[in-house]
Image 1 (cartoon, helix red, strand yellow):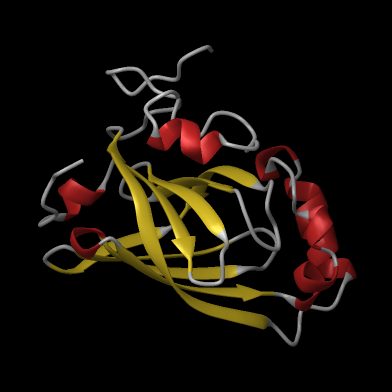
Image 2 (tube, helix red, strand yellow; image 1 turned 180 degrees about the vertical axis):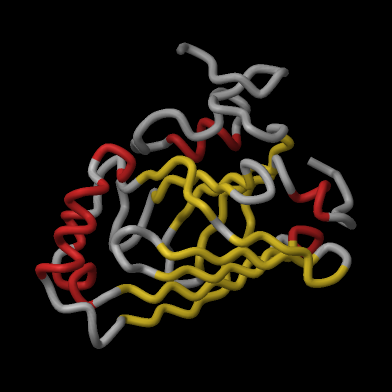
Length: 178
């Protein structure tokens, strides 16, 4: 994708894959002006995926965007996207229970909200594990807003490479092999 990001509309509908400097790989989609979808391919909670996460999405200045949300797990996330520079700066605030029991969160969260909320109440939330990292964007695609095909199945080995190599979506940004 060669788009130059200037406005919030340029950002909305964009699909990203990025790798943090610590090696964790994330796939993230700006679904619309208040919702994000994502899959986690590497790191402490690899295998987790989420659709329709409510988020605050703003443009800080031309081509720089901040996105922040709180998950049902109690995890707080703040991301700064600089797509014109292929950079992301993210800070994830994991509750103590997620650090101690990450396997509970490695699922399709939407089908397990009650489990996330119960775990948040059952286990310690403090001290939080704060993970501030820079990331390099390794893929950007113009999926359009509210495209349900972007994040539509669990993460699996080589999925990010299939996307980067053009083997996952058709020309209209719909999933191949549905």
